[in-house]
Each structure stands twice: as C-alpha cells, then as structure tokens.
Length: 220
Image (cartoon, rainbow, N blue to C red; front, side, top):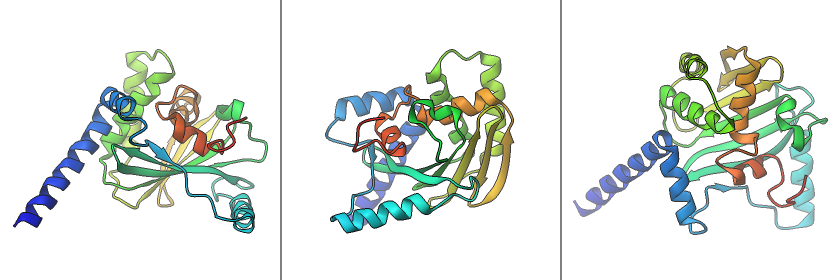
C-alpha cells in the first residue's frame, strides 16, 4: 500500500506541475527564476565523445532535409522542462540561406514531440499567452487567433509530433504525425507564433539558443 500511495502522490504532483505550466506563465517564469541553476528549463542533446563521432553526427544533421521544407537541414534541438518534468522535445529545420538575426524572415519547420498529454485548447491558450510577449495585441485580434488555434490544434498524447511551418508573408501550416491539420493564412500570426521559440522576447532563451544551434558557440 505504501508503494501505491507514493506512486499516486507522484502522479498527482506531476499533474499539478503540468497544469501550472500550461495555465500560468507568470508562475512558470517566477519558478524558473527562483530555482536556477538548480533546475534547467531546457537541455540540448549530449555531444558525441570524440571528434569522429561529432563529425558523423554533424554530417547526419546537415544532410537530413525535412519533407515539408526541401533542401533544409536540422539546425538545432532541445528539450523543454518545467520543474524537472519533460514537456516536449523540439527540433528546428532551416534553409541554407537562414540567418539567425533574421530568423522570422525565413521559412522554417518546427517539430514538437510531446512528452506528456495535453488538450488542444490548453495548447492554444498557452500559445496566445506566449505570443503576447512580442508586444501589444488587441483583444479582437487575440480572440481571432485563439479561435483559429482552437479549431486546428488537437488533443495530443505523449509521443505525438506536432509540426509547424512558418512561411513569411503568408502564415503558418500545421501537421500532427504527418497528417495535415490546416493553416492560418495571416503573416503576423506566423511571426508571433514562431516567435514563441525564435524571437529574443521568448520566455525560454536557453531553448532558443539550442534550436538556433548557438547553445555552445554563443555567437551569431
């Protein structure tokens, strides 16, 4: 009985932490600020141990184009955590002409592999909260974008991949496990949405650096 009780307490605690992450951005920011460096909000994949392994890994990353963006290469990847709980693994593909200082002016593909179950409505609301970080947003515009995301974003289960492609000047398209979800044909929406991960105003600067391939180099 003691073991079952411990498991139940852990599951309840994990569920509570996830609800905090998706519903309360301010709580998340405060928690991360207070707990650093005791906990890490993101982590890049471990580097291979020797030069030959590093070279092979680099070649593999550079040659793997995403099917939604021909000619692209995997730019970077990292994991988002909240209070030690994995939220999702993120990977970013970019075109050869991609520039870090103009990240939102280039087509990109972002893939999120979720590590926990989330409701689509919750993902939509959390996304809108993060999009507000880029600057003022009228309530009418916010509600239009929220409704559009709620229509597109499904409930996701652990292990499912949600993929988004930013097409500057056009908007954004989405897939789940390769199945098309639809698009939001609004250029400003595209910039704000992908800015959640790529803009300097992001709430997760460590994950941004990992996705942009700057986590170790520290330079543009």
